Amino acid sequence: MTWKPFATLICSALLAAACNSNPNTGTTEPTPAPQPAPEEKPAPTVKEIPSYSTVQVVTEERFWDEVCEWDGSRYGFKTRTPAVIDFYADWCGPCGKISPYLAEFAEKYAGQLAIYKVNVDKCPNVAQVFKVESIPTLIFLKPNEQPMMLVGAPEKADLEEKIKALL
Image 1 (cartoon, rainbow, N blue to C red):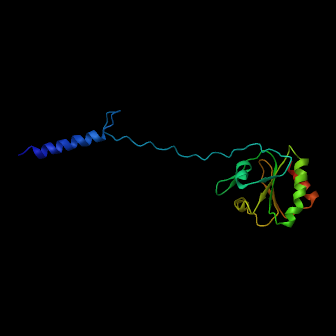
Image 2 (image 1 turned 30 degrees about the horizontal axis):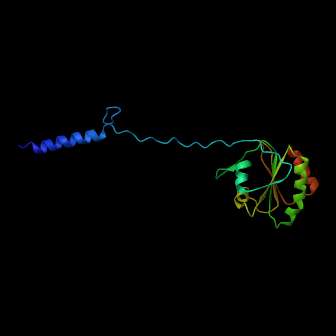
Image 3 (image 1 turned 135 degrees about the vertical axis):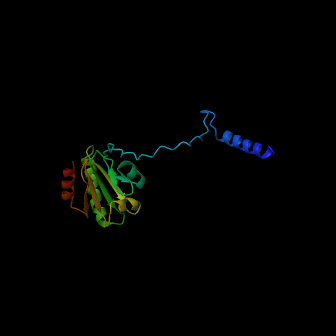
């Protein structure tokens, strides 16, 4: 009997054991790869929305940053300040009719209310999330309450009544 096959077998076994050993622990178990921590979805950041003395025309990015967040299936408002969101378009006649009213109310209720304008032509994703199908559409947001939607151009007195109910 020759010792070569037996020596080859022993050398292979020793080499395999050396490759699998962990120098820090002295074990022959492979070191497990570090696992990334499971991603946790952060809670919505509720913050005080500045109440401007003017109507704020917002981009889609600013809208998602300041006013609302969308997770793909539901939205959450980031407001502690009552707010009105006006979905409009530059070419819309009724939208132009209520625009001066909103500007007046933004000044009149400065410090108590934020008014945002979202152009549906420039921010179609925001309009889609809120299921805006016709304009003007106004959404009234009061902290910790369901939003109220108003479609169409209300008269000035009716709009102010809705805003007062919001405050």
